[in-house]
Image 1: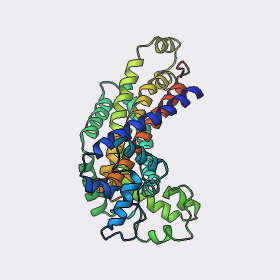
Image 2: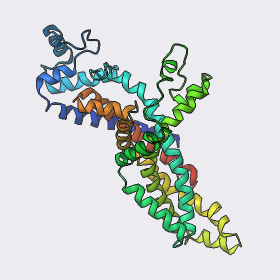
Image 3: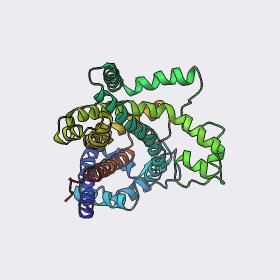
Length: 348
């Protein structure tokens, strides 16, 4: 398995090379004046003013913007490898710094959405399969259909109106106003970047609970479509394995239907579920962008959308590269889990 993991990780640079090449070709369609501004150093002292002619000329020389395209591409990729991903005037910070600072917030949001979605999909998918054609099956299938068809931004607006505007229970953003000075203070240490965890480690359970309250609505919006898809996959997979020989043998031994489903059918039915989870990051990435904007959640998705709206090429590059890395690593993790669940599968 180790050789397989190493081989898959070696694919990552190739994919990133293709992505950067495509982005560079698209970047060439931008007018020359705008391209120069993209490369301006992130240490520009006057953020609100226009760059000087000397600064523009120095930038052209550094990145070879007056040289052949191959030289421009090589110097641009070199700057990426050195950690110079450009500067975001919208957020007034270097792109790489802004991306890394917001990754934990988005990771926390996705975790709060994905874990419950998977657990509920396994439980309700199993209930629907066991009671095929009965009322529980119809209810689960109808709920999954509605969950898949409901646009996330519409659901977000509905939840904001019902669960916040009318009750005030689950507010938007990442934390309350009173918690911000404490979290951003010198005494609060960010051990993991996950606010719910760091607050507990800093002896601030009230802030941890506040962070959970702020996560409920955006996590629900993200989880609904994921749960709907995984529930349908789990139900279909369980119905498919019902006709296999090992299920027939288990029933012939006198095992109850609950034992057959729990100990024999469910384990094998998880394989398609794992594969589906491994290929859903693009769906989650899109959902994260929408949800974070609606709930004003300061994560990678909102950061990227603001950059897109202001035509900031460095932000586009940073978001695209991060998305590629997440997609490849999640696919690799799904393959490993596939082999763990089913020992018959061998990774070569």
